[in-house]
Image 1 (cartoon, rainbow, N blue to C red):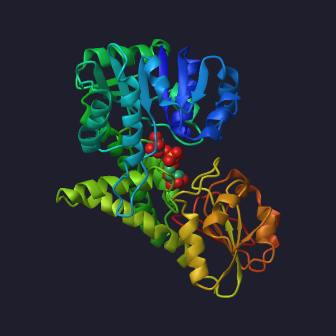
Image 2 (image 1 turned 45 degrees about the vertical axis):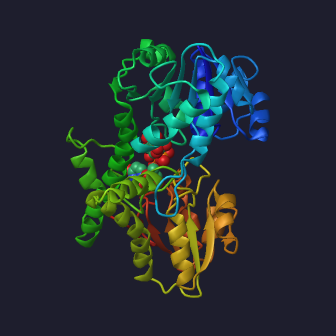
Image 3 (image 1 turned 90 degrees about the horizontal axis):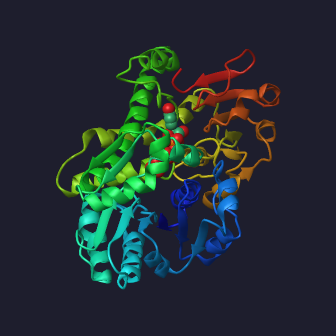
Length: 431
Ligand code: UGA
């Protein structure tokens, strides 16, 4: 197929490269000239395992990039994969998505025949029906259900394993309201994957497809918050929450994934999507009790970690190490990272913070330019009166000698990555 993808963030770029790998001819469209230039030179604008080799293999061949939305008219379908950031009240800002929808609408106005627009961006049902579809219709002069099709096809890619997740999905969700032409085009798009693996394909309405994405992320975030809640209770009773989680995970109705308790969830998706779902519920007068509690518990976990530290050391005026700044290992992304409230809480207590992360220090320095950044975990720990472990980078499991160089070897672990041992005062957040 001839496909255009608008947006070159981690979803758009991953999608463009993977669709090229499936055999499609892909045009990636973005308003950012620098990104387009880099893609055309075979460089990826983002770091994802496996992505660089795909982009360099297909750039200039099956994968080209352009700043001109007119390219969409030359393709069979256009995927919208632009960001939908959060506003201050938690609701989503769909302005970039609607602008992209208008640009694509203008581009396909002169196209003869049917064009399918596939919405990948995470948006609430009303935004699709109330803003995206009208924007394309007005700009193109085409009618939804006539020579225009609009489908909703959410993504479930994780940062750090996006290529792998695309190639091995748990499910493919096609929201088309039963539009046969849209379903045929999407079946052709995913055919190389579907012919290779047995992947459940969910054919549903557009509104349902949009909601499935939010429900998926809200459920996962709630699962972590629930195990954190249970973990906090476990800690109070001297029970190891990880042993409890291992056992309950064996119940097939619960499942073992996403039961790692600790300092909480972050990233560019869970915080934004849970807030958007809660804001949407409130906008129609419904109080989403579990979603609200999911968010509130997550907001409290960093403070619990600091209270564990307080129990052993007065941090005021003392050097305290923060190990791990990224929202999860394998990324330099600090959006929604639990390290931010941890650092803020330490600064509020008067601590002298020295932070270390193998990849995310530079990004963290934008939020906290005045704290010290160490070049290694050992350097951060040297002379420190306490350490808070916030990201589960595997290297933190191997710091034995470095803990001995601390002024006070007090370690509070928010991710169960450091082993409890003689010679250090060790506290696990939920164990
Ligand atoms: C998440 C979802 O997992 C993807 O399916 C979804 O496509 C994506 O959001 C999105 O909406 O785009 P991601 O944010 O990349 O993916 O990260 P996850 O690997 O899901 O981790 C999220 C957070 O949960 C991290 O801070 C991680 O440390 C935390 N976590 C995860 C736990 O605290 N405990 C666990 O057991 C698992």
